[in-house]
Image (cartoon, rainbow, N blue to C red; front, side, top):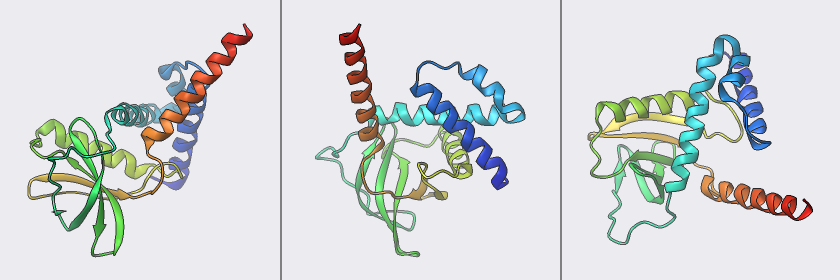
Length: 182
């Protein structure tokens, strides 16, 4: 994907998210603005929705009896960052490049079926094409010892869940203020 094409897609995503934050927006109608890139835009928006849905399931603390793996592939596991319904995100160290990464892998005990492989492939490829300061970069997508994973940029700080909580609080505050005025 050329930089110009990626920039255009990024601008469309930003416009959509802005329109969505200002009220309801018809996704199909908006996607028509993308022309020949309509399907590509819709796929990216579906992944953004998936990330928002998964953020609802994330927990900040691991279960007490959860044993963390020592490594996934070449990556050394440092700690659990969060988890969803069927995947975990770890803080991991890449010994080859001596850097920290966020490593997303299927939860222990989840067997990677054909659908799971397709989902990981689709998520990895979609995110790999996005270039935006608020979207982490994908470094690697692979499988080790039967465990699929995506290694991505680690960004310390608030989680997506934290950010969504702030947005919800602000929206509830704005609704309350509107109700008090009306």
